[in-house]
Amino acid sequence: MFLKKYIFLQAPYFKFKSLKKHINIVHCVAHNPKQKYSLLMKNPWKFLVFLYIISGTLSSCSKFSTSQASNTSALTGWKLNDERHGDFAINQNYKEQKTPPGMVLIEGGTFTMGSVQEDIMADWNTTPKRMQVRSFYMDEAEVTNAEYLLYLLYTEKIFPPRNENYRHIYEAALPDTLVWRNELGSNETLSKTYLRHPAYANYPVVGVSWLQANDYCEWRTDIVNQKALMDIGVLKPLLENDSIRAEGKNHFNTETYLLNPNLIFDEGANIYHQGSNKLEDKDSQTKEAPFNGKHVKLHHGILTPDFRLPTEAEWEYAAKAVIENREYNTLRGRKKYPWNGKYTRNKSKSKKGDQLANFKQGKGDYSGIAGWSSDGADITNKIKSYPANAFGLYDMAGNVAEWVFDVYRPIIDTEMNDFNYARGNLFLKKVIDQNGKVNIANYEDLVYDTLPNGKLVPKNIPGKVMYVPITKEDSKLRFNYHLANNASVNDGDLINSRHYRKEAREITEKSRMYNAPLSPKSYLDEESGSYKTEYDSKLRTTAIDDQSRVYKGGSWKDREFWLDPAQRRFLPQYMGAEFIGFRCAMDKLGPMGKGKKHPFTKK
Image 1 (tube, rainbow, N blue to C red):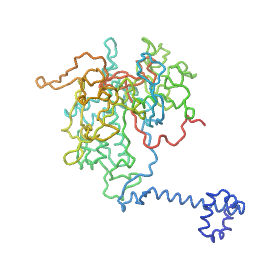
Image 2: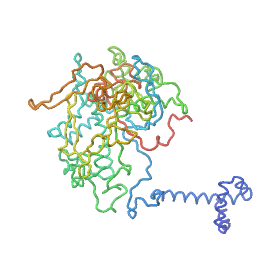
Image 3: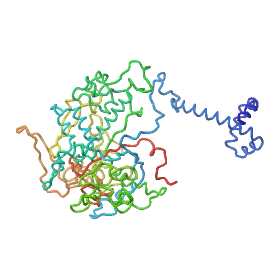
Image 4: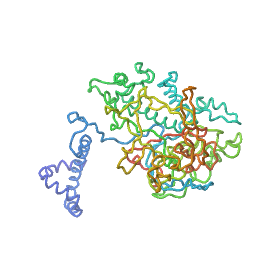
């Protein structure tokens, strides 16, 4: 109250002062501490009131300039999001990426990849390497039977198997339920019930190959983005619309939508408009549905990045969760498991003695004695049945092992790259037709590849953008990549060695690093009308090839040795097992963290 009264009485003092003198005073206060002190001693009350007024003025100017800058190009002065200036939609007020449903943020950092406390085989398969991992999101638990069943039911509705054209699309997504069979075991009931019975709804899905897990991640990207467009009023609930419920014609694809919304839904612009909330009057848009009638693009920040399988480095980093052993910018000790300590049993009073993960206790012992089950499960268990690690991830040891992105090689090569390491990149490019337009697969483009185990997998699913591997011409004069398929880059084979010869440009028997069996070749025998497969009959010394994918973590069927996150194994990408599941990951865009102190930050 006194301050307001003082300002009122002294108003003439501020009224007659020149603007130039005010600027000089502010400059002195900011850059001359001695001058600031002399002014304060000479007339302290006037000085304090002056600072109060100036600070308020500068604050309001700051807010005004900030709001103006958000709609103006800072380097050109051109107005953004303004129809008079071209209506260039650029979002400069994007706050941060939202955490996807079911995921947690894994803040990136450095760690020692491949550091194990036990190496029984002494095969240098887990040589310690220092690695930097970028921040990413990861599912807090494995994909469950219920979640995978949603994928199957959705696929069945979009591409019904009763239609011969789509039958193999649905069948290619089905897990191998026969993985539960055993020649000397009584597990046939699990083959019939584990995937679909509600008793196992929240158990991790198994019998899924690496290829199927990868397809699920792609589908999840599309279904999440489809819902995002429905939530903001751009798309109607597609499955309720009779006009686009026709078989195979309501398949939403994110890439196709970003390219041209009129190309989705069987390439029919009129069909797309029937499935969208297109408004003729732009003024009728509301705050609740600001994008009605508009093409939502990537720079709007609404559509989510791609879901994918985590890389081996990401999975191991997330499982170890060394963040809880951090002392400022150093680590205290080493971790053998996703939790702290040398033992697998719980130390808390209420659950003392219980196992912290679901794994095989010993020969013929998967759960313990009846009435006192040490881990609560004889096969898999419900997700989140055991404590989470420091990142909030469940079952990073035990329950099921998990597929990761990487092609398997015995040695992790970080001499060439120690930043976000991954092996197996396949660089593609869009198929462009003679008219310069991107090709969208239609129903005539749908073809099938035959896997070595005889299963058919679809290629060029209708509604998707068509891709082909890049060529040497595409990578000419580049220094960061040269090939389309990078599974064998710098792994010691002839082409990547100092003994490189011009005549060894193509992968041949002589240039193969690993003496693995050649991939079986399947073909349709026109005479019999059935598929036949030719197998490699030569004696081989290894099973490692470019189709071998890494899986990490122990499972309900493994001993304690495999619970160490650094341990690694492999399996052909087209095979599934009753002890292998998966979870999805997503890149974190923008800053590493969320701008808040981490719960393990020392005060």
